[in-house]
Amino acid sequence: MGTASYVLAGAAGADPHAFASACHGAGRALSRHDSLRRWSGRSVADALAARGIAVRCPSLRGLAEEAPGAYKDAAEVVAAAEAAGLARIVARLEPLICIKG
Image (cartoon, rainbow, N blue to C red; front, side, top):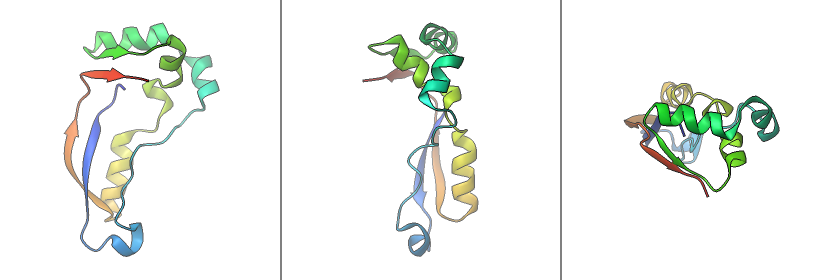
């Protein structure tokens, strides 16, 4: 929610190693339970709003579970995929709004 997203393209010759696929997310660094202990939904919403990111979510609990800090650093994950020759970065996108279902 509060970190950049990336558009990746498959790298030439990566098919035998990655089956023509690339990472589709950074993956969690903390469990949902640990996220709930660390953040409140209100604090996450306020922190994102302070950065100009609008958030809409049916519950504050859901925001706490999905706090940006609960995930690995996406920049590091895509840099690793690029360094491994599995994909190349096409674009880096900054969030403006996030809608959680």
